[in-house]
Length: 173
Image (cartoon, rainbow, N blue to C red; front, top):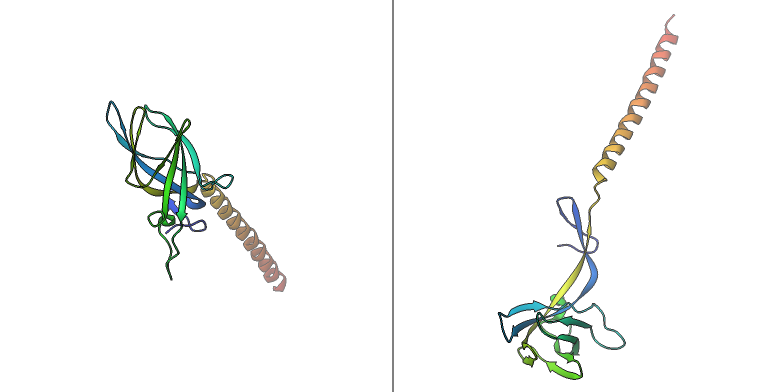
């Protein structure tokens, strides 16, 4: 389990979860000619000017679309638990798509015929941002601190050893 204060450490890299997260609709694009495929579109983690999360994107070999997530009703947080995946599977929603002056609404499982192919909205997924930190100087800093501590121990040990020798010499008649 990782978080914004508990990293996952892999090969010297420290990976932290960030506060950036959002929704990502999964689509199936079937062009008129050629092989289709699945893809997601990452919506920003916040809406603009009172709208839901909004972005533009180009379908492979197809038109440019504008998409907005319109959340109709957010699910309640379960008692004694947390929603998984920002509650993407429980959210009642639809997507608003625009191509030029045309406006379309899609719910999960619905398809839309566009110039160049057919777009099917499969489901709503989520995305999460991470901070990845790697400091190549960390071993050198630890080694420098170790050498500094060893040097100080050696210096003070010599001081005490010499002061002990002087005291022994002064005590002898």
